[in-house]
Length: 84
Ligand SMILES: [Zn+2]
Ligand SMILES: [Zn+2]
Image (cartoon, rainbow, N blue to C red; front, side, top):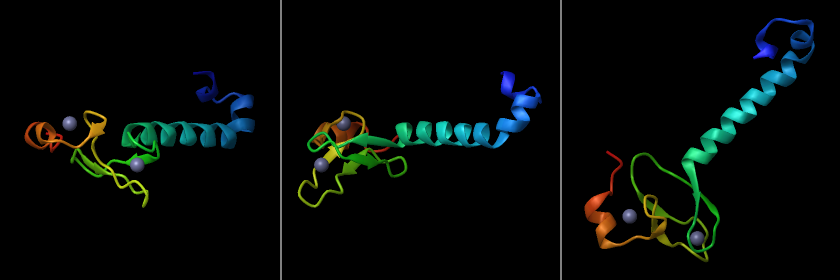
């Protein structure tokens, strides 16, 4: 990529480019570790390898499955409680 070449433009924009890369990386991380609650669509962060999710919204608190994207059920408990 051209901005890694050490050109004049790179030196001038170094800080901006650095910032952009960092933002891009953190956006990727958020995409991988959060999914919207199936009921209220608030973004919920995944906690370790467990597929059992609970919505943090006090008025919702839906227990749902990260894997299926629906309400937590017996199949989820048996099949993919943990991401291993
Ligand atoms: Zn919810
Ligand atoms: Zn499931």
